[in-house]
Length: 352
Length: 276
Image (cartoon, rainbow over all chains, first blue to last red; front, side, top):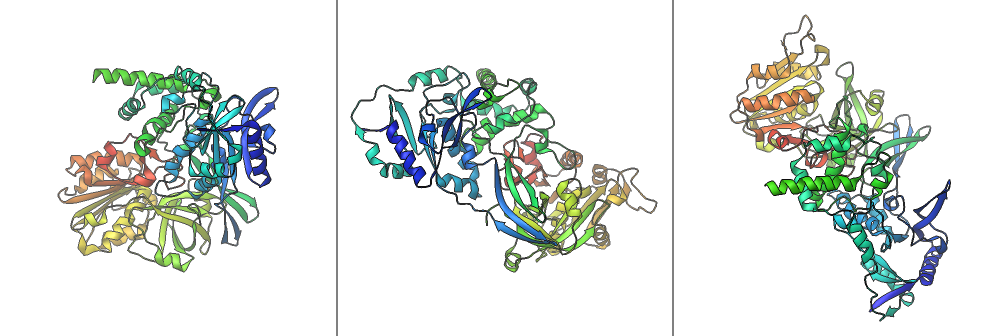
């Protein structure tokens, strides 16, 4: 038996939660200077929610990892300092219409945020946030989630997965948090004995699969053994080092910690998104920079995602969302890069 | 109190080491934290000036000296310049201790050779005082230290004290051109001084810290002299922000310097790419 949820009931569910004071975040359509796009944003009205649109330009990570977050405030008077703690519990948030690649990223980044030290901010947001993902009904030439072990119907990181079926959605409950959401909305999600109308997203999955095929284990092995390789210079030649790829990446989580003055004798310490591509990222006070050129910095990006993080946490730090490819002004194409590295790995494998 | 919130410390004393290097002696404002605070030689902390930001330094004092910590720093950036403007009695922030440490217990009963260049003496000084404060538990202790010039030598009073002690051997040098007429030490680079001092590799540990050039020349030299790579220790000073393995800044290959280090052996460094 499958549970179904109509769009009308979904809207009612959203209206209920908005009425109860829950922050609801969903893909909404935007038009800026004639250019249309979709982005995750707080909604006031369920009609704003665009579940059939294209992928939001920025990832969902901003909901649990804001671009700037206050760690604490301070007051200073004649050398004496008072610290005012920042809250690490947050108001309830429901995300409707998360892309599976964005939802999965949350679970993947959980690993590092819980590594020996528990990041109260990340997990504070995580705990407050219920994620309802929606299976993809479309993809483009930059999508490659299937190459990193995910799919357009992946439930990872989601509390519910909605699978579009005509004008309704099939509801897949994934987590206890999802159970709780179902419990308060049971009458809206009646059981239906309509047989599954074939895998709705199988056509999408085929399309994504055609973009990139790779063997992550082999890739990881090759990367581990090829820190030095002419490929790195060649790949990075066109990279400007702007870091846009990291800012739109759902899994990139590097941050900077800075103090910002907010008046005489008071201010806040904040963490802000940072990126490993600009040279400043690793520059020492002495002037020495361990990553001396763009090839070293781009290599770090690839290594961190496909070698370091997998060897440390057993997860690829990439969900194949393709945003880094779409956003790059220089045309750096991670699909082409992974394909080339994969080919090197294949050739190395055959000569072993 | 979250992970990123520092404890407040008071500047008790400021020691001018050189024209651009200072040591701050700090104590925790909260007596409970002061009482409970402990660390191991080689660990580091995040020191902050409110309004300027945070900076990463090792703890330069020894864990055997209770009730305070010391930080030695060169003014090179925004935070260290702000630290230079502070006075005795001012408040700073401290988070830590973080990272791994030198194997003091393992070194007991063995010879220890300390080799440092410039401000690199700060983390080594922590281990030096740790071993000197437990002097009877170690065999021969040798300190080999060099700086660019006589005026760049840090901890001058302590160098004098170590030089006067009979239970520790001290070798000092300055780079050619950095000597003064009354300089009695050697005039050469640190690796040459190591060769001259020729510490015995048997039953010995080496603790090395200095600018990248000193590390990259001294580690192979020690191995050539017969030191086991597993017993040559150094500490990497990569740029860090969180110190907690989250912010993604200090990676050297698969290693997070803040969590897996900052202390590494020469044997470990050989398995890492040269990104430090």
